[in-house]
Length: 303
Image 1 (cartoon, rainbow, N blue to C red):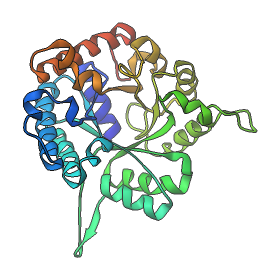
Image 2: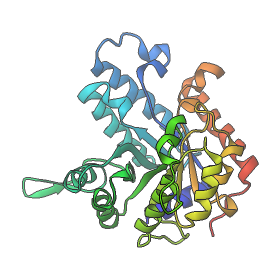
Image 3: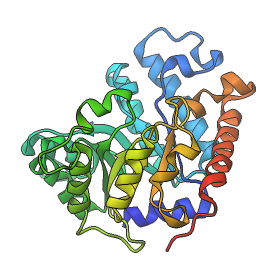
Image 4: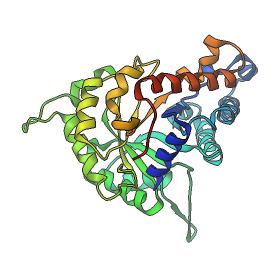
């Protein structure tokens, strides 16, 4: 199962770091920005940046997360760069998380799922559009909007990460509200995620239906970690958003298991602080993050 593959790669690298390829033109060094004057040229420069960065970190991290909004802003060429980035990362042996936060009514959700996880019918046959292993989805439309993704996860050995407790400062305006039964909204959503993943639990006790739980809310993360024993966490908020290793400790279970931590700007833009080649700075940032997480989590052991 894909969740087992992710866990095994985390254990092999001893680095629960996900490199967030939220790449835009302004993050690139001057030599890659030089002469760029059209969206198409920007997309090509970004793809070059991404591929070279992937080449220099693929042996020390288990995964990348590619955020589609950063590519959509460059139009069709940007979207093509998104898919090319996903394909290249997959070829290099990385687990690829497409960060698109998709959902809608059931029939539309099924088309989103076909694009990123499943297959699309064309001319009497089916084609696979994306090279993605996981997709971020918004579960706040309820079960009928999630069901198509769950079906494709089973059919194609894929996974999803469902928004539960997000890292943005105002998430509590909705997610921390109390329901009539005493649960918060995020606890209710977490319980739904645990239930949705009940039939897709892998060898290490975690489901392919994971949860997005922000590092910037450690108290809520502790509640969710205890409440959702079979749910693997995708953890945003480390670095530029203010989260640190100590804050995200609550997202993990014993043995450093149960989560992967995203870092985008801290890796993409590491060259701006460190100097030197951007790809060397990115590799150094990944190793520094590995050491920082290890100082809190210790050795990661699959059980």
